[in-house]
Image (cartoon, rainbow, N blue to C red; front, side, top):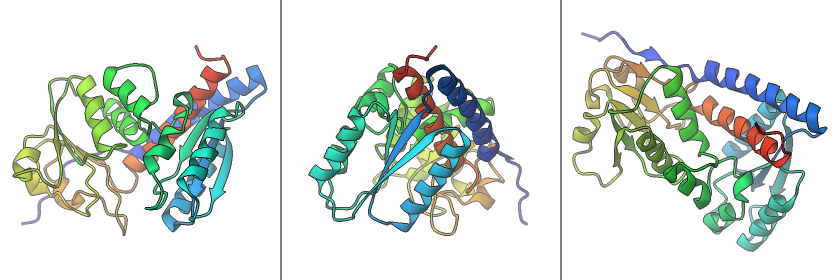
Length: 287
């Protein structure tokens, strides 16, 4: 017999809209007080269709939030040295308050070197080692946008990580690892899992909070879940499919993010919020 979905949806689209509206108000106040609008510079290498679409979406959201959007398009053949030089110039430009290096940048590029050229005060995407260290030690700085969006979703739906078992499936530098550190900072007991985790299913079944960020469509199913778990699907695969099999997971979870409409909108909303925050700090209007 087919089970009926019981999980409550975590609406990232609605929450992201509220965050963007708040960012727009803050950006307008900065412009009123300084005569300068917050500015986000986006660096795009090559013409990867997904990246081009994503950057176009971010530029549209910037306009809605009253953020100036500056795009720097570089050929796919650009060298690491030239990319680092471009990012360094933006870091030194006082009219730019936040920098987003859209990835991937191509296999011939030292992506980490390019990320590290972003000045910490302009790292509104939270991709530098400085930002990761700040997240890990609870110091001032900018969080990685997707994990930051996940934490805002948990807060909005009254999920308190303290004392909970959180399992993060995935260990990327801008999603899995920082998500675990943010949960740890909120007193969750965190387990990182990955492709070499022995008996992954057993680990996942212990999760009160599950973060799926492995990059494989429908990799986790309802059978893998602890009844009543909070499921955050941070995956996005071809065909608008997440890393969790939504239909089966929704019959066991208490809360679950849809794909699309869950984590994705939150990522952009946090990027905009952090750009406005960065502008406020640099222009001397931060509270």
